[in-house]
Length: 307
Ligand SMILES: O=C(O)C(=O)C[C@]1(C(=O)O)C=C[C@@H](O)C=C1
Image (cartoon, rainbow, N blue to C red; front, side, top):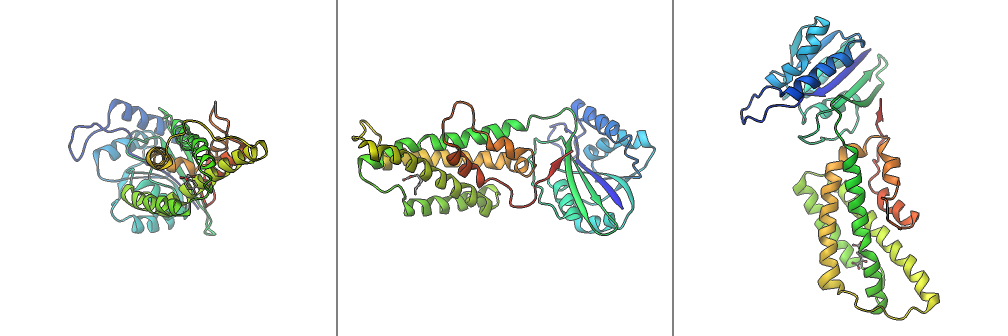
């Protein structure tokens, strides 16, 4: 059996060189990691051959008396196979764009690249003799405020939904159907294109935006259901759907996709789901509308526990 702790290197100096050292904060994080691992029964340490990764492993090496073995981050498949054949407890120090991927190779998980500015994730992969694999995540200190990313995402959802009452009023005044299939098709096309440009999984982005549109139709239907029995007269001074509201929706859709990208890695973690389910403060969407809007953001694979 093996337990493998995977971290990316800690904060590095921005000196423009290929091989920078850690900053003071990075060294503090590396020390914290050594303390965290002190009672885990470590039997081996691996690092890539860069100063920032070796310096991240160094306090743990000093504390445990273990040597730091080097591995090639360009040959992750081979390294994963090597780790899978071992028994023991290991620390593996890598990079932002190799560490979640190595964990995925080991555990069959779907962890995402979190971004250059995220330094505090510690992935723990447990491999059993029988071939079972499990991954969980915890956070080193100084802890970073990732929950703000979920709040930003929720605000972006709320802002887009916030336009839909005006859409409904325009359609009411002009006797238009709530559903606009051509407009939806164009938004889905644009979303696919943007997702590819951004490096976001297009299927995930499409699902996220598809559900925003389901939620906005539901919101509009809820309003019509009040207006119809009340014989609501036309609304005054409603902006133009084509010239004003839809261009605004396009901007809000872009902002939402940016927020999805920044929060994507967090969405895979189990505790994010109840947070997402709570409407942002001060919004009065129905629970049904909010539920539709966030449904498209739920991971389709099993969520990852936080230790
Ligand atoms: O643009 C509209 O007509 C809307 O109602 C907005 C919206 C959307 O969420 O973008 C929702 C439903 C329509 O079928 C198309 C688009």
